[in-house]
Length: 212
Ligand SMILES: Cc1cc2nc3c(=O)[nH]c(=O)nc-3n(C[C@H](O)[C@H](O)[C@H](O)COP(=O)(O)O)c2cc1C
Image: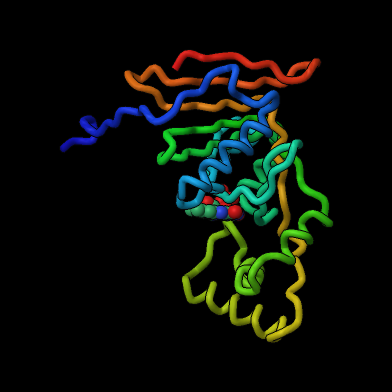
């Protein structure tokens, strides 16, 4: 079968104006919980798009690690490509795709660095091996070989000993995407999908339906 013949009908749910939450993070929290309950493999995996000074985009999967009324939180190396792009252009976009529920969520907004206290809070919850890995990996930079990375890890292990807490690297931290727009997409039959978009306005959030 060719790729062009791959298709599915979407018919599991609908999304109507009267049933959604008054603000987008509340609606996101509902859908996120539903994705967890439905057994989506990594419900907090999302694509983060950034762009460089000239507007050229780049995108990668990261994990959602914080969620509140302000927006979406994630953690990464602050010398990585995404971090460097956010330094020159603090606008970002996120996409979640939960195929088991035939749902997509898109968010666009400004991205700001979290405080050191917020980064410390999440760092402390990470497994020790992940903490050591963060010290060992100069994310997005060219490395000579796999062996070089493994040597970096061994050096981090030796440096931080066996039991003592591993400190947070100065170049590791969090970002918060504060959305200006969040769209909820629900697959429907005959490609007449539901798309409801919240947009930030002076008086709060407006809600509109978009054609699929
Ligand atoms: C499921 C999944 C989860 C990931 N989670 C993260 C994450 O939370 N933070 C992160 O920095 N990279 C994460 N990555 C790796 C990124 O996709 C990417 O390779 C890395 O951040 C470097 O991207 P950059 O060079 O564009 O900065 C994840 C990858 C996958 C496939």
